Image (cartoon, rainbow, N blue to C red; front, side, top):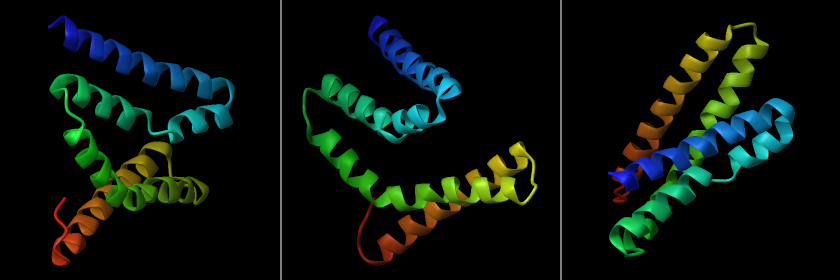
Length: 116
């Protein structure tokens, strides 16, 4: 139980730290957020949990296919804000379109025999 609490604390502190840095400097905050810290943490926890790099490698290989659809959020959100939509509406639509993009990529890859 202490291990899971430690994982939660470290991961939470990282997210809070990035958001606090971003308040002071959007560039530095964006740089920190662009680094795949969550993926790095997830792979590290997987390795520690299993003492094997196999699951971290599979996880990393699947992420590669999902990078492009994740860009949907970062393209749609600012466009909607610039068009005058509110923050929450823009965020909700961006998230929904990003989810749709993920499912579309997974569906298309499945047609080519690539299973994520």
